[in-house]
Image: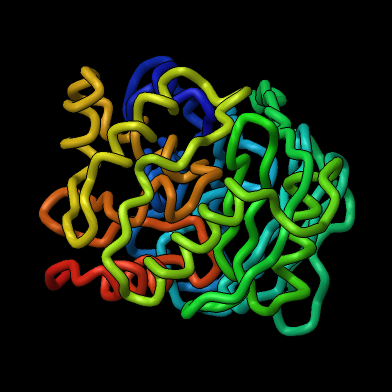
Length: 309
């Protein structure tokens, strides 16, 4: 297999070595608003053990504390290895196990109790992706209780610096806020942040609140992301748009995938209502919060959105 599909010889091409039985060209797959290049064995061998496949993703840019949600898939007994070339990644698998991965470490699965190879290697043709992390600054943060669980809100002099939807419990939500805003101190929010908090609490309780006037601190947020977030804030409660709709509204027709990636990194959950943006055809799409699309469905149900696919 090759990590450069555009340079791969087609099967039977004279450039291919006679000793190569099969050339597997990775196919781009959308795993929730994020492209992954996946090389799979032949279709007839995918259900026959053992086999191996590779996913390559990146380079990618994430705001600290943000992430992406891979579309739900059942655990099917595969052993997995995740290796990171640069930066740091918090990885949560489909069974809920989570751990931080750093360069040179393996997030290692097991199959029938046998550990996988302990030595990480760089495969031929794979180059470390460029990765830029944008630190979100905040003076303070606070947790607060809502109808969907314990949320977090961070603030700065410029406005709300971030909102965190619930993790599995209050302790996990607090840990996530400290990871996202390492220089912020937990404390009582100032008046403007209190008003934002109260509006979020009311909206999540089912009250018809408009959060579009809340001031946001977008220092360090890329320009395209800002345009996407501003467009998302114009979507009224109970309504939805598709990623393609938002792309057209920001003057980037055909950039639905880029819109999805921007929303997956949205640091202002609920205030920037990324949950109101769906895939084409009314499909629910991905969601990067804890519990993924189930959280998205719950938020839309609270707001009275129509039936979703």
